[in-house]
Length: 134
Image (cartoon, rainbow, N blue to C red):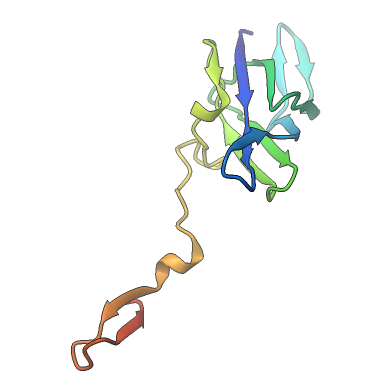
């Protein structure tokens, strides 16, 4: 089993437009049991707290049979869950690609809910717009 260094650096916007160090934690959970040198490793989650908006950790590199589930709990931000593959080489958390846990391929980048509504000029009424999908 090889390990990968992961560096998390997170910030949140301030009222004055600057970025400040985020506070909160990240929960890491393997998505499956695995065997390493005859020892069964159970998928127990563990928490990493942000200190000064950052955290450094070493995670087991995963293979094609499992992923890391990451639950992000940053103060003032909606929580989020992603699934990632950890390489053996050092990586910045922000560079990890969110994966679909069913296919292990990149997860779709979901558009915000309002993206389905297009605003197009109404040819019959100049100055007015039609709202909705074309």
